Amino acid sequence: MPFSSSERERWNQKYREAPDVWLEPDPFLPRVFSEYIRPLFPGGRDALDLAGGAGRHAIWLAKQGWEVTLIDISETGVEQARQNAGALASQIHFVVDDLTGFAASQTQFDVVMAFFYLERKIFPEIVKAIRPGGLLVYKTLTMAQLKLAGGPKDPAHLLEEDELLRLSDGLEVLHYREDVAKKATAELVARKKRRREAVTKLSRASGTRIILPTFPSDGSAGLV
Ligand SMILES: C[S@@+](CC[C@H](N)C(=O)[O-])C[C@H]1O[C@@H](n2cnc3c(N)ncnc32)[C@H](O)[C@@H]1O
Image 1: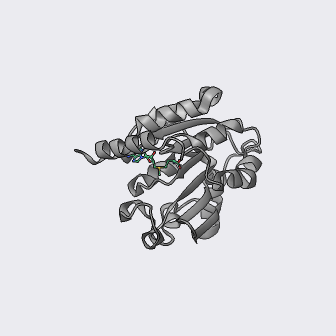
Image 2: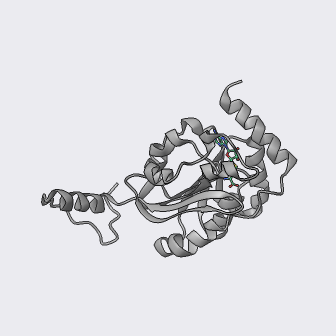
Image 3: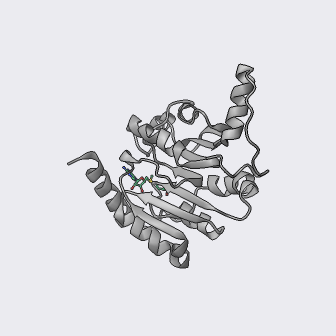
């Protein structure tokens, strides 16, 4: 059986057996929301929830007025997400898909988030999916989990020390923390620079003077 089919079945079974353990959002999301997301996007915008499972983070963000696209390989998890969302389901696009081949489309998002999922090879595509000026919010388990009870033991699903920082190369890191408590985790908030900021930084580093056309003060038009 190909990896993804067995992975899908494994998660379908987990969601069927314990539908109630995936309801409360990880506290990192509300914290990041008040510290970074709301100040940057006060009106609420659009987000992508990678491997969003039964929807606890997508639903929480939809409650704050955001439109969220949730992708997950488990059709059982995604169906539970739809049920759990109730009336908020109209703000969430539910997609059953295998992220191992994830390729960012033309559509970009102000926030791309992933909780407790790791597929290293798609990181460049994850970064592409963030709109310039937007945020990556990431939290997952580290290798230190190997010394704790429970949780995955396969290194393919566990981050090495500082690996999240290396994977997010090119983004401006706003918050990074590794922690070992009940779980061993790394969490990151990083911002994708607008092209203008990236070019200014490059010109400072090289000493070259680059003259850009002027844009509206919010820096939005023509920068993507
Ligand atoms: C530990 S759960 C986390 C779910 C959710 N992010 C949360 O925190 O509640 C991992 C999720 O990854 C999904 N997953 C595993 N492999 C996947 C793949 N190849 N493509 C998409 N989703 C996948 C599983 O179905 C599961 O929902």
